[in-house]
Length: 404
Length: 55
Image (cartoon, rainbow over all chains, first blue to last red; front, side):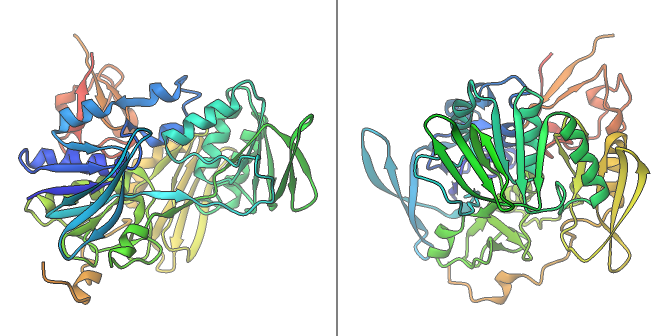
């Protein structure tokens, strides 16, 4: 009974750890196209305030992970293809010195391939970098680029954009944020609350350009980078970071005959449409919904670890509020998964509590700012769960499975 | 009375017995042993058993 996990991010590593809680013997192999390092991804958008360099964000080296979890780690191995029928995959090992192709067989395969930053087309010359921060390697590049610099332009006023802006602004940078939305975190909170965040961050040195998009960037030897917005505004900047969301990495899965929509389709047991192929984390969708946060992945990893070690365990998720690290305005969000409904807000000034009431009159999401964030756990208990129990009219049972 | 600190293996969040965790309903001085076994890390949902003793 061997388990192969593709991906060494939070989902993959948490799964390995949880499997070891239940079973010491099962051989586990983790494959990663990058170097394997244990770090906490949400820290990437707050590392300046934590006074940590990229290296210091690494909590566990590959050696420690391999030893602690008794797992085989294959770093710098890119999976080329998966043969779900014969239960084997091919990986290409590639570093600066050598490259070789290996075949690895499995009993159970777990796709924890994560998601990649969405890139919106922006007119610029080839030397003008559009940075994005989705892993530690990206973050190392980002920190190099902002050294000795002053002005940073962020595209995207969502979670990552706001956290990054806060981290930069509280560490002496001038930050501009561009987004087509009307207020920050628009999908997770009502306008009145977003306006408070906007105000608080503006006082800290963040300049908002909302309802606009970035159309082009010109780089000049002398004056540096100038960004042009859809309304004709121009912004001088030293570096541009794109934080407009993620798209699940599904290519490997779809090439292996696994059913994919926006993300890899899984049932309540995290199984895909192929027998003994499971998926987990940012690359999956549950009932058409992707849940791109740390906590759902942790819950899914715990349930899948039990399933893989002999106790079928359906994934259920309570409402999982997330703290958004905005130093000027403490914020907690628990976005509704279904957008049909209305916001109800109470409180004053920065201290606001917003409930999202769905069409059935039930609270299906909420957001809190200022002193109201202490109500996080109370509201989470009252809120509709993200993934309730008993959703087993499952994809996998409806489609033809291949004989194992 | 000596207080201990425990650190989350995933996200490095620290539980300090002396400070407790009022937002989680644990008054200052709440001993690690008195925290329910099914409690999970408020930052990342790791299990209580995924915290390790640091001091």
